[in-house]
Image: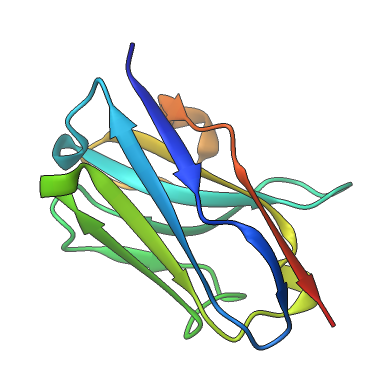
Length: 123
């Protein structure tokens, strides 16, 4: 069964860093664009970053630009989100999601979703 699994979340102080990972099984991640989304309690799900299937195009939301870096290692079937200069407002459940080839700003067109990894930033 094809799936993606996130890891790497945790509790960190403001200004700290985390590296989230998204590992696929049952599918070849190199054929998929992968997006990172987050959802804080009581808020809508927000797209924060995405990378296309060959890593040529990256997208970052304005709220994370300059602090988040997305990358992929297709040989390991894994994608990463490096999060630096964490802020309390980054606290959320972070999800990765995959769809064929190209990024989309609409979460509804992603076919595979992980269960999420919690990021909590203390002030």
